[in-house]
Every structure is written in structure tokens, then in C-alpha cells.
Image 1 (spheres, rainbow, N blue to C red):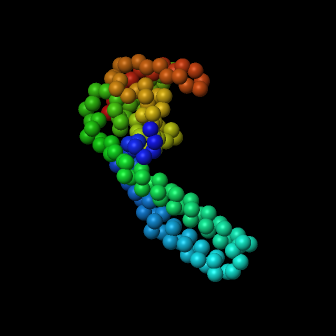
Image 2: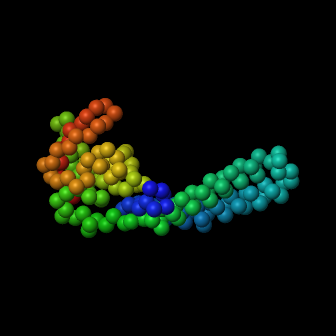
Image 3: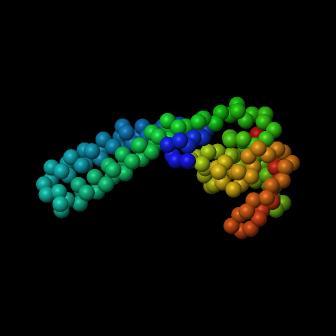
Length: 158
């Protein structure tokens, strides 16, 4: 499956953040770099002009990121909070409390583009996310992790 036909699952917050980043690149950063590029071009010899080269590379990076974000936004599928409210099994957007090694942990299952382990947002494509999808409270799962197999028991789903 290529990026062109893959769905991008995002929460409303994730979608808003991507739109904000795209708008900032298009309306603020790109015009700034174009001005820098123009000013550097006016300095003369382009073959020895480090500012021109740097601005050109930055513009290429920004244009690539804008293209990537626009593709993400076209393919975005919103994870609605209503889609998983009252669900008795884990779906995208679910907040799942699991117990392992005598401790509880809370994870939110999100699309891969929004995953952030530091914020306990795990991708539905990750080993733990895949194992949780479709499971219900009291189900037990086993996940292969770099430290070995970890057993989880689902305590609650919101």
C-alpha cells in the first residue's frame, strides 16, 4: 500500500495541528524563505553564495513538507469521539487502561501519524495497538516487546 492510497486516521486535535502547520508553512515560512532566496540571488555570484544555497535547500524542504501535509489532509479520516463512546471493545480513539506487572497504564489508540509514546498515544499499527484493537474489558493479550513478551489485561475502555 502506498502513501497515496493509505488512510490517515487522526483525532480532531491531530487534524487541527496538521492544518495549523500547513497554514504556517504556506503563509509565513515559505514567503520568508522566498524573500531570503531573492535577496541572496541579488548578491551576485550564485556558485559561491552560501545563503542562496541554504535558502534554496530550505525552500525545497518546505515545499516537500507542504506537499506531504496536503496529501495527509486529503486522506485524513477523522476519529470521532462519538465513534468509540460506550464501545465495549477497543477502536481508534479509545482510551484504554491496561494492567501489566501489577501496574496500571492508560493509552489512547490513535492513527500512526499522531502517535506519541511520551503522551501515551499509541498507533493502531504498533504491536500493542494491534493487539488491543477489537479487544474487550477483561481480555488478556500478549505483546512481543524488545524486552520480551509482556502480558496485559484490559481494565477499562473509554
